Image (cartoon, rainbow, N blue to C red; front, side, top):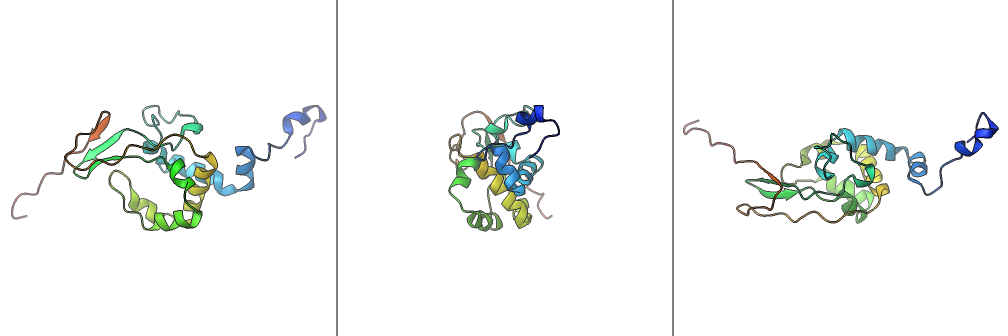
Length: 164
């Protein structure tokens, strides 16, 4: 990298080889993954406080899972810590899991299955470069189990009238 003014050379230096900026520059899919995580609403559930803070959560806290429960006829689910989850998968394993995903609500697994391979790779690479952080989300609770607060409750849809 070159600088127009020699006096500013120190501010124009290339990022350290192991910095997130250098990694993103080395692999353009990482920046695409960051974009997809933001606009694809991954953070809405998988990052604590993201929704209630209008997305103003430091990237260092992104995708660490949440203890907020989503309770309904399926039981209670929690958004997993994707940063820990992805650390144990190769890119090929992630693609296979994404293509065959079938998760409980509110996870829109059907949307993940429709994503292009390059987008799935980008999400994987971005998440991996964030590094392992946080702790596992609480375990799934079966139907009929009252979850600890906080949680959102989704009642079963009404049954259609007889004969319809």
